[in-house]
Image 1 (cartoon, rainbow, N blue to C red):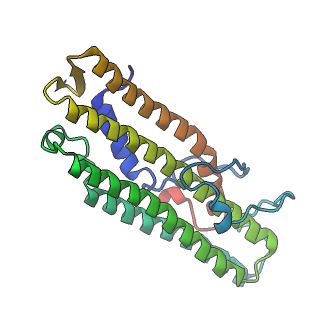
Image 2: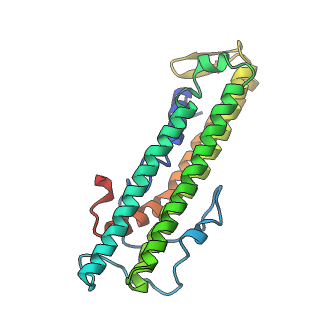
Image 3: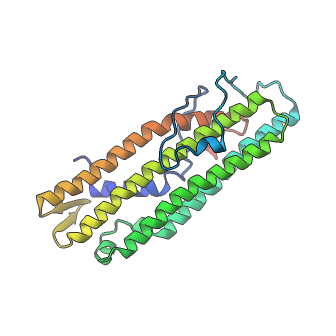
Length: 260
């Protein structure tokens, strides 16, 4: 066992905000693009929002060296800024939505003890899951709107395809993050049910939960281990998507997304 209950609470709080705290902005960038199959709760939906780029090689775009008109440069900057501003707005909204649902107290011992029928826990979990799904859906709608506006410009097919590639990587990153966070909440629900069912037969001290029954302890520890695995696997899958999105947005001349 490598994770304490205190660490679990941190994991849950990460799940509360992971898809929202500029998940697309905080990893080192790269001008090379990779594409992996989208997975998760929304698998299959990303292509309808930002279509898969053509199979031919896509020229790397950089506003500073691009041979385009001033009007086209302005269009590119507006698209980049719309991506950054839109994600920032949606991030703020989803954090507020999850906090309002009760995410910060989801694993509070006293709350669980007083929630014998688990109605409050179920309500919090349901609203948190909905917030995660809403964030993906709202981001997909944002990207689709930007794509539609971009199609009305006179930007070249190559430039538009480059930007679409960035949006696809960004949406895939949120898709993967959402899937992982939903799985973490599933494990959190199992933990809450176990703590509630075994009330009086466990203690909590210094962030560690100890059950009197070894079988219960083994079950509890397995939930924590599974959460740890979910977060580790999630980070590996998301990293290249985030790197590609960040590099492409930066290439649009709107500054470093890290500084937003």
